[in-house]
Image (cartoon, rainbow, N blue to C red; front, side, top):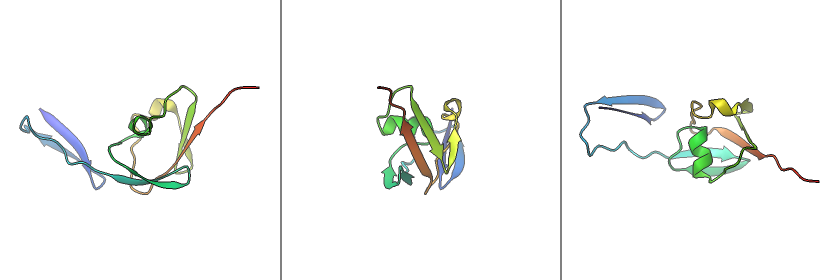
Length: 93
């Protein structure tokens, strides 16, 4: 078996870990829509949306002023101090 986790921005791999092993919890301080927030468990944009309980097909995210395609949310990691803008498209008339 193998476990991977981030510790201070470094991805660590542990091989042959015992069944009761759990990687350390990490928290990140992010700036989300202009407000500083402490994030408990998110490692990427997909997990951030889940942690913030944001759902729906009409959400766009910019990370540090760069728009991230939805297809890259899983692979786009988060780091301390990142600036995240989350926009919800709303239809209507």
